[in-house]
Length: 141
Image 1 (cartoon, rainbow, N blue to C red):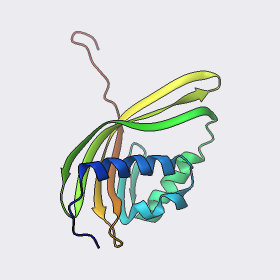
Image 2 (image 1 turned 180 degrees about the vertical axis):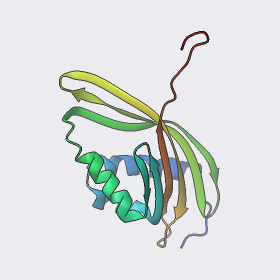
Image 3 (image 1 turned 30 degrees about the vertical axis):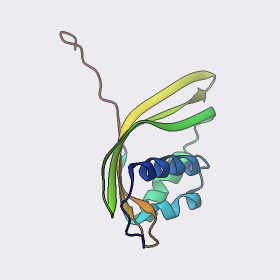
Image 4 (image 1 turned 90 degrees about the horizontal axis):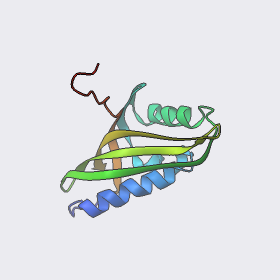
């Protein structure tokens, strides 16, 4: 197991690597990057442990939405902390494509806590995704 500190660069590389692998919609490609005791919190519930996280991903991927030119990516990545064993990061997520001939873009925000796994590589132990808050203008409901 590596004892070198985790760098901001390695955190960003991990995030983009995970996002690229997840784009294949095959959990076996990302399974080793999700900690066995992971806790993922999404709008539709909490998913605790790798098997529950797998089910959440597969449910999303099999949701039946026919999306063309689909693209999911992270932006506004901010690495909050890094040390020898863990890192925390916030970001915006973006999902866009064509659905029934109409262009769409969904944005939200997320945070992740990464830890060193048993083999020394990074794994996600916690993720929290949420939609962007509704912007309320003064004097308007």
